[in-house]
Image (cartoon, rainbow, N blue to C red; front, side, top):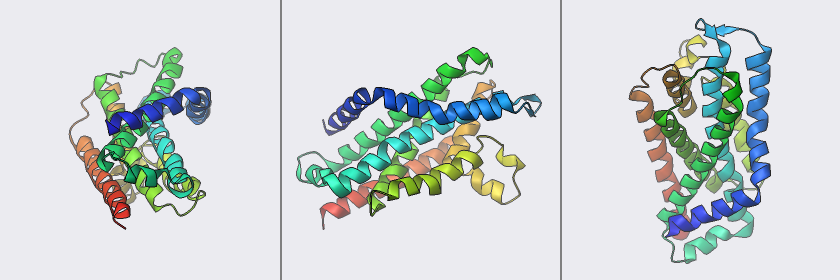
Length: 243
């Protein structure tokens, strides 16, 4: 019941701010498509660069959508509205609250990715996006929703949320297999960046879009991130409850 309650809150927020959420989900990815995909006429691995770029932007949208849906709202609710304190004294099991937040954030990321897919339909790139692709998008969204939860528990002020975006999300946007392949980076750095969640999600979605097999390794990496940050989220919230 607690999970449904949190999801209903997210749905109410989504309906209320539908236009704002949709426009925010479109602006940066569309600019990237115009500047890098249409403005820069180049190829990647012998094929149009746009075919490389679109899967990366779709994966990036699940990251930014999921992360943005959680980190700022939770920081404000915890620090100023004290809504988290109310959750702790309510009958709602805290683990259900955490799961609800993660699912709600991931669904927001999925929405952002679907918006981008609809925008790129007229480009006729002939890329394949199937059920496996959408599962990877959802999984990537859950990872970044849990990361956002952990960071929101660590936030000391309202201004920390934008800083987290600048320190974490912005570097991943440009480095993690979105605009350029991690294989083109210097040895050592490329291996580290390749292990980041967005790198794996972008790579798997891109492989599937070409009709290939995504393999198992990427799923393992994403599930490890999900388990680690979910455990940290639960640890933080139960630690706060027991203070």
